[in-house]
Length: 202
Length: 202
DNA sequence: CTCCGTCCATGAACGCCGTTCAATATGTTT
DNA sequence: AAACATATTGAACGGCGTTCATGGACGGAG
Image (cartoon, rainbow over the protein chains, first blue to last red):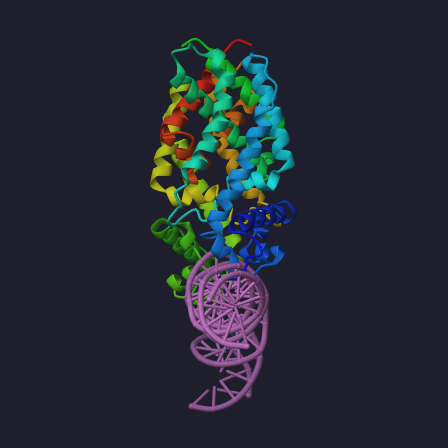
């Protein structure tokens, strides 16, 4: 009844995401343009718009892949039950992940359109993020009484935000403005102070 | 010997910065374009390139203005000598500042060109940042013995980095992904945990 | 008062970008 | 073979930062 597609819609999307990731890994995120992706895929630019609502939507799906890989890397981190040790191990996993996929990871936190009408993030995306926090919460659990789930969740998020400060400065090559220490050292120090702060009597 | 300029080079730069700030305050940072600034100034776009090396250089000078105003706001914050109280007061000043100049402040942490050849920040700009750290160090001083200047400096930077995590997420409108709390609440919580962590016995 | 040299100022042009959509190519069905 | 349906194209649009040949207005010389 009609012409046959070279790739199904789903195949096309996956191919586009593969291609986009390759471009980002090789040439950085500023090289990621609709035309570049299309050309490398061997399609015309117009096709991208039949598979995605726009470049922003495509990027959200790239983020999804990054978050999936991040979750897997973090979940594989060893556990001893001691918060301080487990946090440091988690940190090592995180740092290794960031080192390997620096550009993709940096994209997660780099807005292309910081203004205007911000695309509402899909529920499944928020779910992925929550899952990563879950790991942190588990590790922090021994520091809290069973009834303190809310405080635990709050602490996990707070620590994550603090570490996010390290990551962003490091990614933007601005950390050296603030401190001569390495991102790793700062992150470890951050966890130390945090665990002490959370363990302190109230 | 030659035609008279409507504005001196320095006047022109100041006028451009005023205009750029007005645009950002009224329409957000995505509305800040060379053409928009030139049109609103009553000049053509080409003139901007006689006064600035490019839009990025102009933005660094906008940052400088923001940092100056920030320093003034923070320096005026009241002091009691008690670190926790003074930090919270400093935070309140910071938060008030951010509320008033949200768009300009968000620009500080929003890279336009996160890749490519990152413009080396001028020394005077780094100096402005260091000055803000100085304020934090002063406030943290009571938590440290006189001989612990290095630890104090390290702690000040660590706290600043942690708060930077809050700022950047908030600026990118991503904080709500992490937590339902306001940036203000998170920042306060951050300071609390930090002061406890720094005060804890070693 | 005229003319000229100087320099301010312009804005079209370039090569990008994201996005759209009429036109076309190519396969399937009749 | 003809008709059809749709996958795919790529020129076009408006906007971006940036450049630079051109024009025009002023100060001074004759």
